[in-house]
Image 1 (cartoon, rainbow, N blue to C red):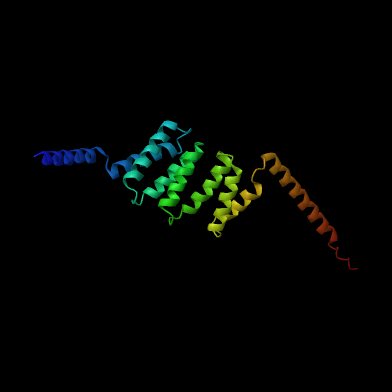
Image 2 (image 1 turned 60 degrees about the vertical axis):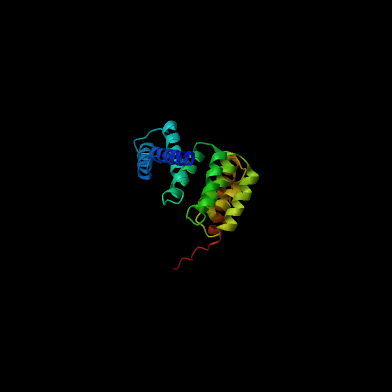
Length: 192
């Protein structure tokens, strides 16, 4: 009798838990509504409260439906929101989660690039940024962002003033080369 009561109670608790969790479609619709609200052209400023609600919905959906086709996109969006809000450690965790759970998805390479970006620009950890950019270049040599990663490595640790001075020096050197090349071009002789 006691075992039957425990079994019935367990089944009842399971039914209550299942009925209390929102359905997949309901959560997906809530996400879609919040995304439209946050990212619409009418949205003139960032609404942290709505962003936090959206992140909670993303996390709930991903936890309850990790194999769903929507989960990788939601995880990528969540990582980007967190990155852009300046929470480096949490962004790194979400990018790592994406690369671990969805390594064959197209955005896995971009997650690694963004990890390097977070190390560089959010956390100011230039050693980890360099290491991650190099790993990205090694792992994804033909990716669209490989050129950007190489450029980031060349400019790692440089201040905006340093970059401007380098740009101006290169521009001046190019102008001098062009002037030198033009002066070497012989003018055609006039025929009489």
